[in-house]
Figure 1 (cartoon, rainbow, N blue to C red):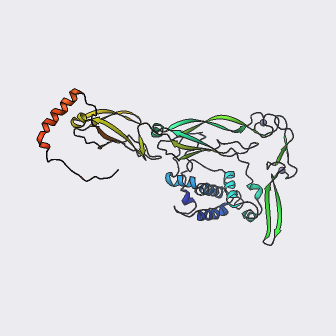
Figure 2 (tube, helix red, strand yellow; figure 1 turned 120 degrees about the vertical axis):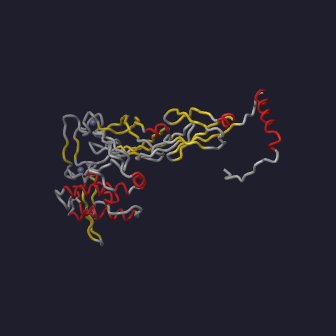
Figure 3 (cartoon, protein in one colour; figure 1 turned 135 degrees about the horizontal axis):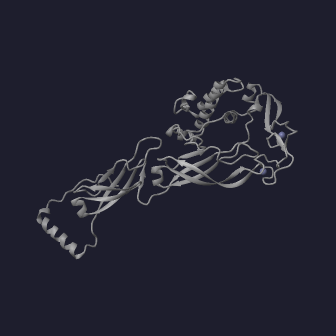
Length: 383
Ligand SMILES: [Zn+2]
Ligand SMILES: [Zn+2]
């Protein structure tokens, strides 16, 4: 199913204020909240869709990216654990959606009450923290797209206890303080009315379970620190400042919680020869006076190999020749930039005796014709 535009999902148009995004999401989330529509799959998918739209549009960085690039194309890569650019392949499951809803509007005292105190349902699993890595790419890699192996130090599930934190062969018991709920409710009254304050249970760290015999490898944490290699498929045409979200490649949470995400920030390495201007790249080519007068053909480096470039006879210094399609592809589009080659004519500074003779003959040839023929022109730009 094609993904709907996030603004459309929330019934908004681009350029809408942050407050209105939240209001629109709140309205839709309230209408389709699973607690109000038990067993209604359509409502559930509307609820998830709205949560996804909100989580992107409510985040300045993600919103800017979505506004620029929209949804990434759906890659037909079955079983690929990596998502495309954030805002694209990114999808939310119900527990994500509930978490987004809870984070947006808080639990106790607020909206939770409207659903008849169904807060236990909203208790998502603990989620590991997100990780960020910077990825420096060459212009060549950006021009073609590239798959990179990233070394990541992160928490992973402990294999000795399968992430449970309990020593093999031993079990867990329900926490006696919160009776397995993982949270405790405190009801307080004030002049404004009754408030229900829900907090994670401190006895079981919000897990609802206590471990009698903790795993020795991870000391009951359910996870260990490891260095792993994650591969990231970077599409062609990215810019410094773009980022990619690899879902579930961040830190593991304690005791089989949900994995955080790995956020890959793209940076661009300065090139020895080329300068990039959006999709185009620029190169300066120095030729001698004879080449400029007579014309020639020169092998030119591009980001994808060498090509021959014809320099027309009579080329002036400063002239720009265009190699079509030899620039950088535009992200998520079929457009291709060009390579610009700027001609620079070099005047010999240390001519040999022989060269001096030739230039002398040339000067004699022009002779008196040049007198009174100097050309003056207004400078086009001071740069
Ligand atoms: Zn363990
Ligand atoms: Zn507890």
